[in-house]
Amino acid sequence: MPKIIIGFVGQAGAGKGTAADILAKNSNAEIFTFSDILADVLKRLYKEKSRDNLIKASTAIRQAFGQDALANVMEAQVKASTANIVIVDGIRRMEDIEDLQKDEKFHLVEIWASPKIRFERLKNRNEKAGEGDMTWEDFLAMSERETEATIAGVAAKANHKIENDLDLETFKAKLDELIATL
Picture 1: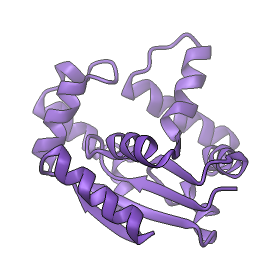
Picture 2: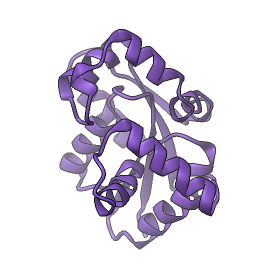
Picture 3: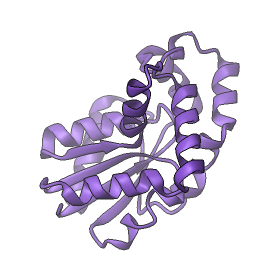
């Protein structure tokens, strides 16, 4: 069982994955993401890993098996981990962390960046199919989707908030401060 569990919440492109990668490299943390669970399902269905397909898979799984279905998978992964620090990335709903937040080792961290910066990051990384061709209007519409709209409510419950509008070195320093605090 991990000694520290860090949950990252934030809008698409805020830097949650970057934060997780930095902590994994610097602290030997293990990363679990909700999108990896969904991507595995899509891969087995021979479907493209697009934002739309991830949302469809999430919706279908939650409707068929309950709103906490993905959270149950995540909790099992976290509990089975032998890493000292575990990162849970991609938290979007309170159901995602209902059980994890009962653990005193769990710390919810909001990663925040301005919409303009997030838009540019999404376009530049082109991680999910279609992101590189995204327009500002597409980005705004994406931000209104149910999967994004619920993030603000979860972020309001965060124990810590890290702003990620500046350079990577500043962001790394903020993450170092977070780990020192925890």
